[in-house]
Image (cartoon, rainbow, N blue to C red; front, side, top):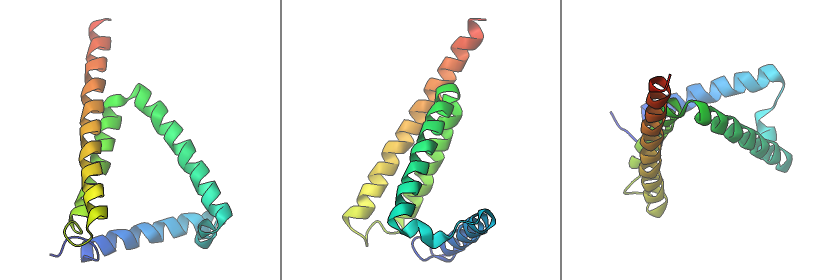
Length: 124
């Protein structure tokens, strides 16, 4: 099976995700094309900021689970970039290096969270 950009698996995942997102947007009355406008980009950026604050709050209380989530996202990102590693040049290298960094951050958050949880349990 071919892995990387335009592989059957990747196309299937992207297709299913796109269909589900379009269903969500259509159910809420939001048009996908609207996000390609300047107003849509501003709103999408605001949504990203809100998501980052919510994820930060989640990380504050559940650092171990957040670390696993962060690690998983980094693995998926790195896997996708490895398909383009030798053909796309610098951009693919940056994604792979960034993925490695986030894998380390994810593991760091996981182990710090586990240590904090252990300390809370032993102090009771």
